[in-house]
Image 1 (cartoon, one colour):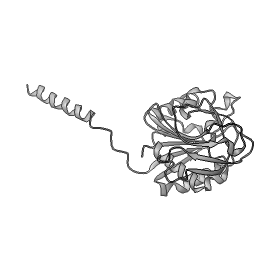
Image 2 (cartoon, rainbow, N blue to C red; image 1 turned 90 degrees about the vertical axis):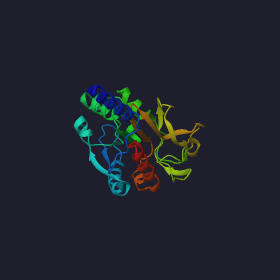
Image 3 (cartoon, rainbow, N blue to C red; image 1 turned 135 degrees about the horizontal axis):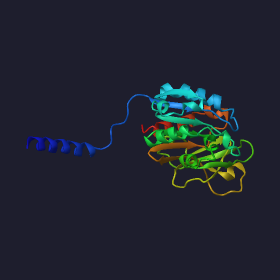
Image 4 (tube, rainbow, N blue to C red; image 1 turned 180 degrees about the horizontal axis):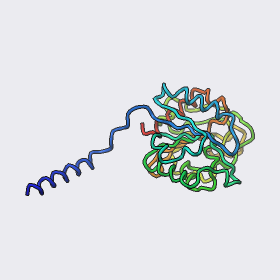
Length: 251
């Protein structure tokens, strides 16, 4: 009987532990891996972007590791990462061989997401891995086209209460390269849009610019802004990015 009583107490403890609510948020700095390898169009903003993210890390509560080596995508390496930041990691849409998420690297990324890892995509992170549908589902859409050049456009914040938009102007004039998307997932939580008329386009529908997603256990923050080197000297853009990283890390 004593054995049964002890078993009952143990089961009771397990029961209440199971319903005690979520575990407390992780403490310590957010460990960010900035990955900036590209085999498609190589953006001039990548170098300034890496340096700007490293510079803001300490004041924003991050630690930053940088890499352009696809071999970093292993289960062992990603165990030490809270947020994977994909900085304009373009591939060639016409060449499947340009894609580096293959074999065990795909599995490592999926495992990272499934155990709750955060993913942040900047600009050409959506211009990547067209031959792996899971990747497009992760990001929430694929880049399809952009108007010529980098015209000044009007960005409207849709959700001003999100960590990535808190404190931003409700309307911002920005110079950037403005993406249009294929397979945009309307279930994404939209943060900001572009007014196409502000850049001379005939389209009257607001164009998605930034969004978040809860995907297969992980969190994804994506912004199409960030084509120009000047973006990474823009206080509003960097505030947007820092908030997105914190949200993706569940902080």
